[in-house]
Amino acid sequence: MKKAMIVVRTLMGLLLLFASATYLFHLITPPEPTGAMKIFNDGIKASVYLMPLVKTVELICAIAFLSGRFVPLASVLIMPSIVNIFFVHLFLGPEGLPVAIFLIAANLFVAYNYRELYKPLLKM
Image (cartoon, rainbow, N blue to C red; front, side, top):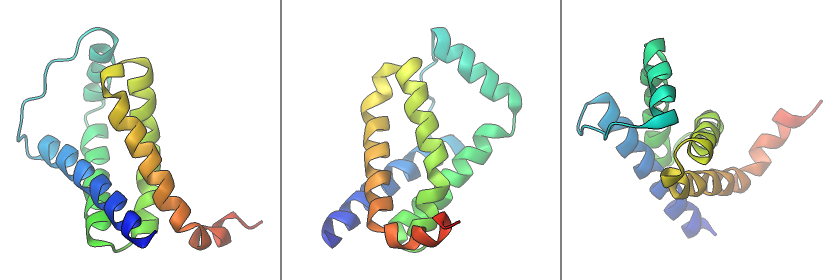
């Protein structure tokens, strides 16, 4: 189980690192979205601060997953972004759904492995 945990968090970390680094450092030009995805992206761009904030959090979490440090915290921090990625691809761009499903499953696997650390947070 420990080896599976290392593989899953490393794969998730690499995926998040790639996504955040390409956005933050303008490494590639993404294809122009169309339809509802374009409208959604235009709205996000209009906010100015949102995507840089999300991608910065993704980068920090990617470093945590890859280094193996603060993994439980990174799992909690990245979950809202992953859920949003899933729903955006579910409703607006189904071509990205397999990656979104992998991210949900991987983060749930990581969180499950650290479930004992989350128990105090869930006490009344």
